[in-house]
Length: 241
Length: 241
Image 1 (cartoon, chains in turn brown, red):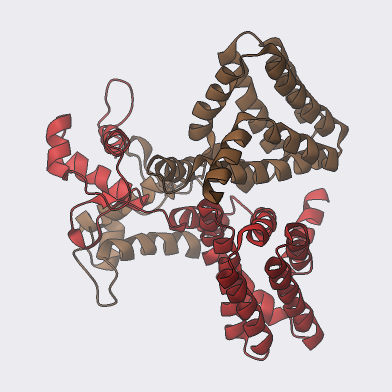
Image 2 (spheres, chains in turn purple, cyan):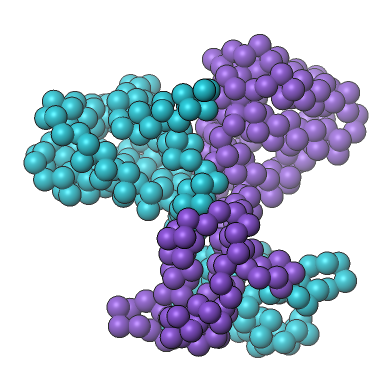
């Protein structure tokens, strides 16, 4: 990909990528706005169509442009999947440990709970409470429990009204689907499951009450009692030893 | 890119991307390990070399593989640039506001300061202190001030010993280079600059002392007094009005 170098050492493809990014910025384009075609950029830049095609491919992979269904390229919307793929790769190849992800997730979710308590609408508060109650009612059914658990955390992230926090939470989803469902499997003792459900109900109540400090504390309590925290403690011990 | 669909609705390229990701996971590959060539994957999957080439291009764009200098593909190392590109695009196209980034950065950096106070080596503590002192001594020279400011935050992130936090901080770098340098430009009054330098010195001291709560509080004080906080307050007011 980087065999064809320009004088300043960047590849032609890198330059082509930058040209499209500059075009988006200079023309103040927004999500969904159309971009000139590959041929038009190739002509303007004096590069081959093959180079431009590679650049468009890289931009599409990064979610910066959207070329779904072979339509004309449009400015892409971010959705957490790019950061999610990066994170998933980093954990699979042991560049980042699950314990490290857990600390980041805890930090982010505690702030999200505080913001949600401050900003949630009545409708959002009702949905968060309904999801916590659905967890309580799903007690025997672990798939339903997991699905409601994930949906509850996403509803809280939406109520926090910060799109970057919401994107970060969504980027954890591929890892969390495995981790959360494993966590629920290990909580075999009924009292442990009940304690986790109670913590989610506490969290929903503090957000409904609009009490940021209490919501942050409830989220901390939820994380500290969870199986992820045990993983974290185990890794931390291993690092010290 | 997604014109050639398979029966389950994904594109051939998406399937090819997944095959490479599965190969990395199934063979337990680590950063720098070699991958089979495009031709080998194309043959195994029964797809064209062009499809495989597109898949490799997308994987390289995401940093999942490294094909620098046209060498054989290797497993890629994450470095924050993928999340950085995504973030930069999202802010440029107004999908995410600077105020939203600021809140995430503040949240992440407060936790990082606490972890750094807990985990820093003596050498790291000395480097953090040296960078804070270099800021104090660079007072008149804004470029030196900015460079030392950014280096200080990266040194604290390294001392926190969590590679995901470090990656997130690095992903803010493209945005921060502009924001930090603008912030220092607006701090024209000498006493304001001195106050900011004192906060960075406080931060370095609390990390050297190994006091996580004080380090977290010092990082909060640093953010609350900064120009970014003023931006944040302005955007928050605009949202309420």
